[in-house]
Image (tube, rainbow, N blue to C red; front, side, top):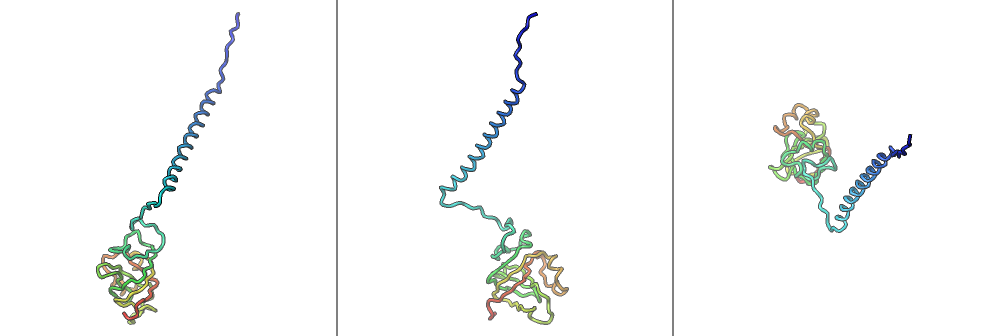
Length: 181
């Protein structure tokens, strides 16, 4: 019987092909990802100005304190609850009860504020604070919900909260600027 020489092909060839394809895919991914980053940097390097997207008040992040009363007018947005507020030179529009008062640029654009102090009935001054309509003041506090405010108020003060207002500025620091008012 005659012997026929048979060449046996290596069964490892498919593994080398698969490895080569994987390496090519990784190289392609790396090159494409790198080009995208370089294009972004090139675009910034030649520019004199860069446009920055501004955030709407409703989507403002819980960052620093609110320093502009217009962010709280006409009504305090639900997203503002818990935000710290620091307002300089704001006018007291109207005093309502022992610890509640309206602040804002005018009687149509205003925010209801509640003093965070222990009420002292039958006295015009709550602790060290005397709030008067027309006075200019620096105010610092926190935005709170109606439920949070109601928890800390005496029964007489609850009646002085305006109807239809769900969020308030709870004032922890009230500094009068104009002593003549």
